[in-house]
Length: 310
Image (tube, rainbow, N blue to C red):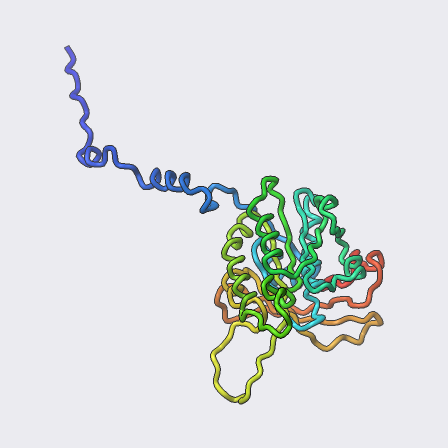
């Protein structure tokens, strides 16, 4: 008669850990209990948007990724045209399905000519805001603009992807400051504070859910009594505060170079320096031309004037 094999006993270690929750189960339980505080259960929406300049696109490894970005530089340096160019390429993907633009007209300078040259279809009527169309929000109130944008980012049941352009931070103001008289002082750094709070609330959602947000601002000069005095190094001199350097993935700085005289068409050559949000000792400065005097959109070889060319 065959001997029956003795029953296997559990190892001592298993006996000691019996009934104790494992780290992975503990993590899953915590994530389920705090769904509103994280994005781990959401699928990351990877995307890349090129520019109409091969040089510029190559400098950014194929284009811009979702997230917060900033464009700063001198007045009439091509910041609006450059960001509208990227918005057009964004809206053209997938025939515009599930993609919409959102332009904040805080300066009041988006002229019909610029709109026609951009190649983008704009509307100020919410009922006409469909896929592939850019909605113009005419406001310069921080609370209204960031409240609207934040609501679109956080409450998005249709999973629509947005390309935001805020043009520009320099003309934005707090609601309380706008209600004050001209003789009353506005809150110091009030706009920078609200911008920082907005980025804290939406920066992770922008990148995770495939949204783009470009903040446009002007370069500011600092007046020194003694130009030779030592001063602390500053990362940037523009509106919006230093929170951008932590939250933004790409910073584009525009400046002018000497215009070429080899062609009859008037061109303005722009130098764009791209600096990533991470500490780096180098910055890329691709040069490209921006057409500045074209007429209707159909007259431009790329379908819109003020577009980037290599």
